[in-house]
Image 1 (cartoon, rainbow, N blue to C red):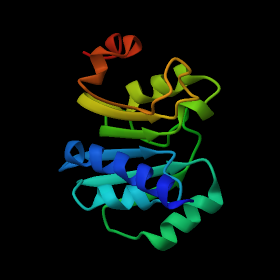
Image 2: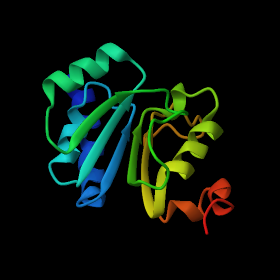
Image 3: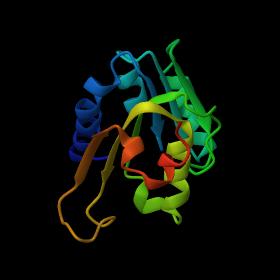
Length: 152
């Protein structure tokens, strides 16, 4: 990873960090866990999930904290109980997902009421713009149509 990419990558976590203080966080597509560990400094708990087993093993080895867990899973089939996550960070993931609707269904399932999500995409993922996008959305349950029918 080049220093520029590393800086851009960590900047996203710095933007998301204030929303994670005292919260239960899911860091989806966490890679080697560096960002997950950064968020875990101030979050109540962080679960980093990535699809690659070797990456998860590396994350566990390099970033142990009591409030930090790593798991291998597909982003659209999360090993989490419903309504247990307050904040989702999901950086550079949408462009890797064949069925983003399934991913958003999982967001709806695991997010607690009044939850937030922070999604960042590369310009190629959303071809309408050439600028990386960072979207921090609170009350995400109102912005995802499929969540409305699941909430009471």
